[in-house]
Image (tube, rainbow, N blue to C red; front, side, top):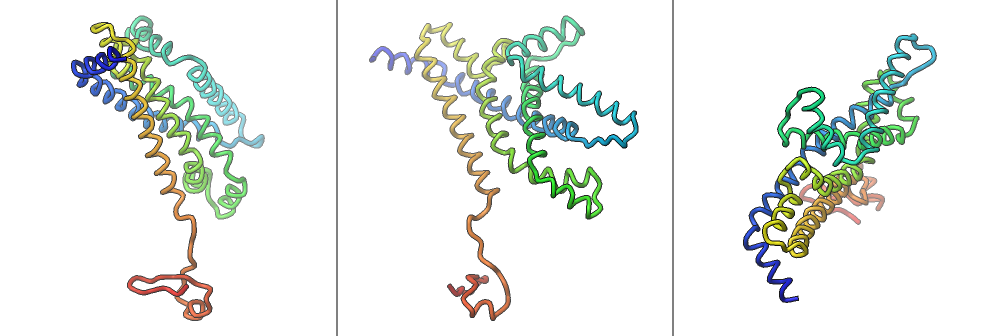
Length: 263
């Protein structure tokens, strides 16, 4: 056991800054990938819920069908294949097949973004469909078109429902960026492998790496739960009115600025 602790100290003393740099790169890729992945997911989710009617022109129905096939293929392709395979295919395959050279950082951001977008697309689509149909009917009754109904009525309600999944994708991305070491991204896992290759202290380095990953994911989970609580608002609401009769009747518990309310 003493040898284990000595190995921990040795690994951290020599490569502590490298671990922290790897953790920073991991967080950066996760944040950027989750952000752009959410944008992609919202765009795809909205497009996949475009209304279509048998009364529409055949050209519109054909284009809608074609769009849905393309977007469904994208979603199933990136949800159904491992990110490590996607990384190799995109980073090395793009150079071979299309003579397209991209830096490993550009590839990393792109890979995480489109992978997250595929998962978010289904989340957004489900969130939109979960909003009561009466909301859409009410918006149409007020004269709103589809775009107004979507962005002013449906998406604000769906957004609150899908925040937990956004947070979950961010936490997953923190862990899954470890596969990007296959394209030589110096993330936390890449640093761990480098330390092992230098000091041959596999278990000790893995312990340090695990603690750092756990710290990042736990902190992210706490911050997201705090955000959810803020969006939920207070659990209890008091009726606020200026009617003095309501105040004296005991039906109101309201404290105006600088005043003491009546219970």
